[in-house]
Length: 142
Image (cartoon, rainbow, N blue to C red; front, side, top):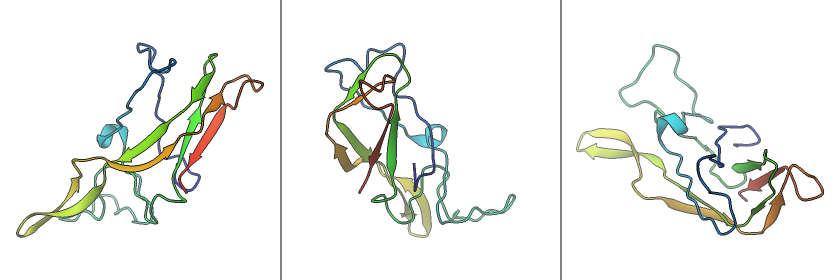
């Protein structure tokens, strides 16, 4: 979420994988235009049919014009019958930036490396049963 508005809903529980069991460690790598469609922030969309040699924004990804701190929230929402204990959640991003790709060309280029952003380490119980835990948990980047 950016400033309280949902940018994308992504699933963390895959029925074919034993991914949220005690001791499980899993990376969720959401990248590219199919998983992270373009979501502009303060850069206005160009009108339909109008293009530029270098678009004012990349073709995919989430723009945070004022940075991530104070604007990014990861919302965890449990839906199943099982209780889940959220332990460590580490956030890494791959930035998309304007870079010179030749002596006279600038392009939008995705970083090849992940940049560490934050860790939420406090154990919190999530459950659809309110006596066991919360149903929705917001991880706010401050």
